[in-house]
Length: 45
Image (cartoon, rainbow, N blue to C red; front, side, top):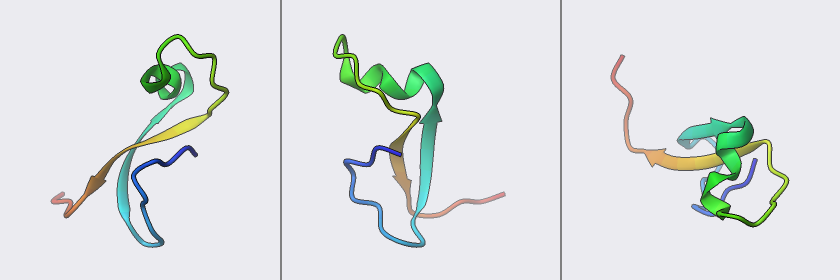
């Protein structure tokens, strides 16, 4: 998982997987399986 947001242990995060995970890198061919897209303060189910 590529994480440039600095999520720590126990953090609740939103992820993107597959081809969509490489979208933040534009045309650069970055091999990544998952991308940490957001940090969540809380999650209501």
